[in-house]
Length: 220
Image 1 (tube, rainbow, N blue to C red):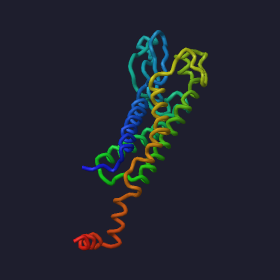
Image 2: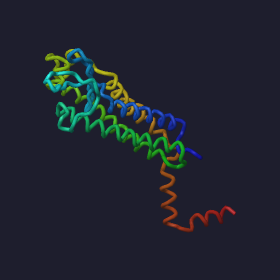
Image 3: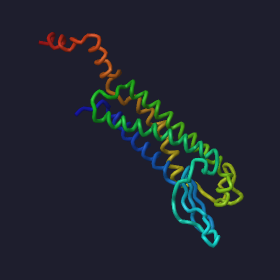
């Protein structure tokens, strides 16, 4: 079993896998924003939350210490968080698709050429750019009433109040930066062949269906 990647390409595939997993895991983890409400730790993602207020049958307000996603897309606290959810989700999907193709390139010969590697690097750049845009949009939702209940009335756009950023936010931003800067650059040197070999062979065979037999005869 051969490989269509150079040594640099193998490093690119490994880093692509790491950045895709780090970004995608951070996307689903509700640990972007951390604070407290009624003495209980509360954390938020873009579309998920841990520990939320609820009323009992006696109409008492209590904090339910469970994690879950919002009931609907419209229930996400702010418009900026809704956009962030969509944008970062698309970016993570792009990084995962490129990482999967890069890993297959380690096992399948003539799958990824230099041209294809550069195209995949461009897709990684777009994915990282989308994730970075989502991270930039996230602080715009800190002025919503739901966030102010946790972070205090002092919280506002780009003002945390009593809250702090969680590890998932930093991991998401770091994965996006690595995909945009490191993986995009390494992708330029990933493929062994300058052009897609399988595509060239298929074109030659369609143009001359006896090309393979003729080449074998000439070698004898």
